[in-house]
Image 1 (cartoon, rainbow, N blue to C red):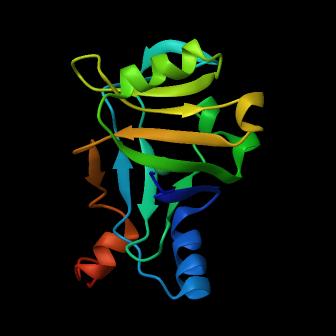
Image 2 (cartoon, rainbow, N blue to C red; image 1 turned 180 degrees about the vertical axis):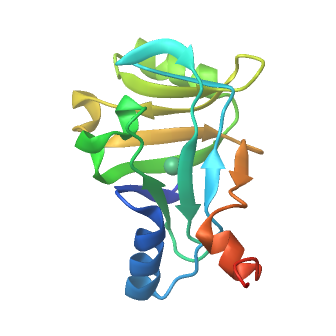
Length: 163
Ligand SMILES: [Fe+2]
């Protein structure tokens, strides 16, 4: 039986949230990064489009905490979605097949990230079947996560903000 791997929280200011959640939990967080799949679709923006989501994942914790920054360009990560954003089950072998299985059972999804070959990297269940709680399923293996080297956190931790 798969466990919840992380809990996603959508925040207004990512640097501030990392500070607050670090203090609150005593946990360490990875460097601020961007999740940048080849394309993304959601119900409110169904045309495949670029997606660049700022995130900071905790190193500690079971489940981990994934802090995501408010993304006004992306309806699934917009103002109305602030706060508890999703719970995540990871390491799915075939995300497209998993998504189809839910579709066949009438369980809706909203928000799918795709790789360059058009294969789904992750999706979020949404709607009444999950009581409005997004549930993320993501594929096993690597994901397009890039450390944001110009972020204040990265620059501070690597001594780049010294005069
Ligand atoms: Fe997530």
